[in-house]
Length: 469
Image (tube, rainbow, N blue to C red; front, side, top):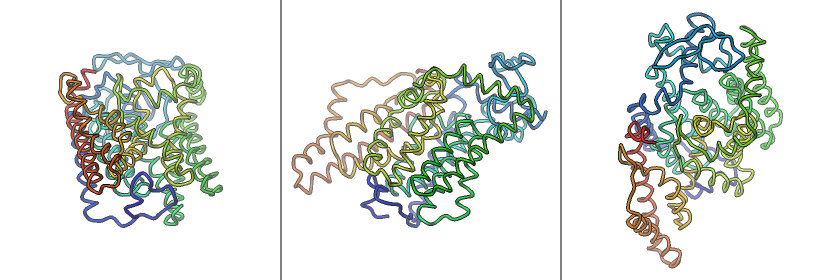
């Protein structure tokens, strides 16, 4: 892919096969993933805490008891269940029920199986330290798949910048530790998008189709919202003229949901139907969940902001308008918007402020758009673009002092921002100059580098900072 097409404009005009991976690129990719792993494993049980979200115990317990008792036991609060006993553990009391049918079994089997291999045999043996490596490994796999997809759509430079952002940003590090179904949905979703791109470029054949359909079957077996994802993938294929495969994709998603129904029938089909009905009647309040999904907190159990996520939506909007039929619109923008629409239909607006993990599925895709936008801001420095990077992404990485919030002198901060933007302003004035564009590019690159370093420092101290929120 040419350098001219490497960035925000890449993927707008057509579908391109990627270039070969250079040794230096592979080295950079490996180093970024190592940094991402270090930040995610550092104090990984302290932020978020178990008290911020105790859903992981549901998955760990259900999967473990599927292995040991051949029936899923977990804590729950739904009224349709009959409860067996109260378990005291972790300073809390849990109402235990079986069979637990609130979620499909795939993620529970993965987490519970890992706990079993780690030595857990009873419910009280399962700990966050035992489960979170599963989520972290899945997040690293998602990052790698997201890079491969982004490299095809927006080019190598933008994809690598997006990967660095995803590696060091506090919101991404925090959610990369969370043991939720979305952690498994993300790599399945990204693999499916990657197969669609391969099919469009002529690289993929029957194997690509088989992987795509398998992902669509597994998504609803991970979470019911996987049906929405499979539908969005089907529409993506339809827009590319592959209507037969689009129908097959939707049918594969329906088959995955049918397998979840069969799983429910294996234990108690009437209870499974009752659980779905309670989800529908109790855990939905209007259709504002889609809006809150976009604008609300990225935290787990408490508020935590991620300005890069907001910038990603702005970048995706621009990408949609500039290339309505290209891979940027179909593989990045459309699935994100479709997922938000699914949240509007199925989500609960009352919990969006605490359930930031709903975003995990889309994080690599949204950050790909951020990478393209940030690279364009470096290559073609402009006042609005750079200021937007600072206001949204830069502000996210300003809690650099553990134990207290950073409150810089506003006059000093205004001076620093002004100095950073001054070369871009002069470049706009002296547009015929050959020197000022280079100065502006260098200043923009240094500015974003400082923001990335600040984000990494904040992520390293996340255990201390998150308790102050």
